[in-house]
Structure formats: structure tokens, C-alpha cells
Image 1 (cartoon, rainbow, N blue to C red):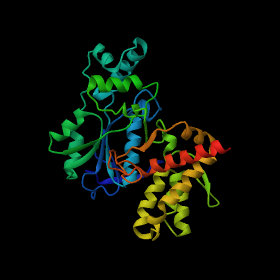
Image 2: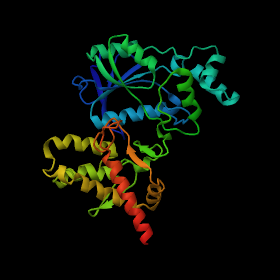
Image 3: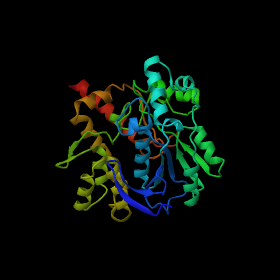
Image 4: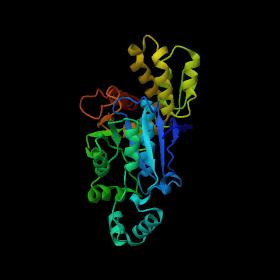
Length: 346
């Protein structure tokens, strides 16, 4: 099991894809599959041809997969067990019938499955559990919003910490997401940003994603064009021009961060802790002054508290709780005040 593998270089990050000997199960790993950290990130993902291949936007399946890959790339660790079981285990044909009913008769996902006399979710996770036992993984951080999946693993002796995904809510999938919570017992965080005094952001493809350093807005600094603020910030960690250029040319901000993570164990500049906030200020100022639409977006947040909401970072983010420093949010609010003053003076 898991003896044959091939490189998997993606626009999100570089991993390895393993042959399991089972055509219905694929394993993708970030980092060394046999030397994962304690409680590694784990995504057990069921296939969704419509969203993953053809780009359908009426569910959140592809979104969850991409988000999982981003998280694992950043940590340079994590495992995805990809299971070919469409339609919550009912197969592609039944799924197409159910989605057709939803569209024509204005049914939600639960009503459509009931109309077809289908059980709502018959997926099994035996293959995934077998792989976890083979890898001797007894404690994981499961990226999921599905209590049924968590229960299946816990019943097999695996200690679970649940990590929610953060859905990209669109007109096409909003009703579907709410029905998953209300009728299937999922735990999607759909109402996180309902506090009128606070704006939470993290993923660049979600509401207020323009505030993220990963948003696709180039900046011109130090006589160079940087694809994103994240590219600029990560590159400044190193004194050597070759290392800086390696990060600047990364095909995505996630890969830029991964490359910096790999390099900083050996080449991090001595004064980084002293200057990192100065560097971040420079990057943010360039981004929100060189892109007038982003300047207007930041100013439109009025006096709301800006929070980078993430489990991943308790310095720049809030650590997904009150204990994080949220320094990125603080710097953005400082910049917003500066831009307001400039607007008044002009």
C-alpha cells in the first residue's frame, strides 16, 4: 500500500500522489507521508465531477478541496484521501437526477433525495480508515464540516480535532449550503461575518478577500513587480538575491510562502523579527495606493474592526480566537486611517 507515487505540482502547492492499489482511492500527501507531524491535517474528500472538473458553482466541494490544499501547502504537511463516491455515495447517475429535480422543481438537496427515495448519505470511510491505520495516524485535524464523517473515524479509535472549511458563498450555492447545515447536521460557518462591527477575512476568493495578502494584486516595490503582497513579504526574509528571486517567481502566493518556509530554516536574515512589520506596512501601503479600487474597498469598511480570522496564524491573524494578535488587521486599520486623512486633506 502507498508504495508507488508521482510528483503532483499544482498551482496551489507541490505534493505527491500515491497509488493505493484501489482505483477508487487516491492519496495525496504534502511533506513526507511517513513523517507527518503530530495531529496532521487530513481531508477525506468525496469526488464531485461537476465542480472539480467542469467548475460548477452550485456546491462547495471544489472549494473545500482547494482550501485543504492551501492549508497543507502552508504547513508543508497533510494528507488528502480522495474517494470516488459521488452523490453522497449514491453514484453519479443518481446525483444527476437529484440535481435536476432541484433545478426544475425548486427543491433543496434533502427534498430531492427524498423524492427519489434515496438515503441522504451512504458514504463509507473504511478505505480511508485502513490507510490511516497503515500510516499509524491516531490523531488528526480533520478538515470537514460533517459530523457523520467525524463519528466514523472516532468509532475506529482516531482522535479528531475538527477544522471547518470556510465556504465561498455564491448565489448558486447559498441555499444548498444552508440546507446542509439545517437538514443534514453539517457545521458550515455560514454566519461568521454577520457582526456589523467586525469584518473577518482570510481566503482571497471569499468576501473581503481583497484584504488578504494572497489576493491577486501585484505591487511595485524596490524596483520590482511582485505578483502579490505575500510574494513581496516572504521574499524580504532573505539577504541573498537568488533566494529573493526564487520566491518572487513562485507561481502562487501559497507556493511563495512554502518556499520561504523551506528556506528560512537556514537563510533567514538576522534582523527579520525587528523589521517584519515595517516590511508588511510597505507592502500594504503599495497595494492599497497602487490599486484605486482596493483603496476604495478598504475605505468602504468604515470603522469596522478588521480581523484576519484563521487557525493558521496567531501573530498576523487572530488564531481563530481572541488570543491571536491580529497584526495584519491592525495594520490595515492603521492604513485605513491614514487613507482617510489623506482623502480629507486632498
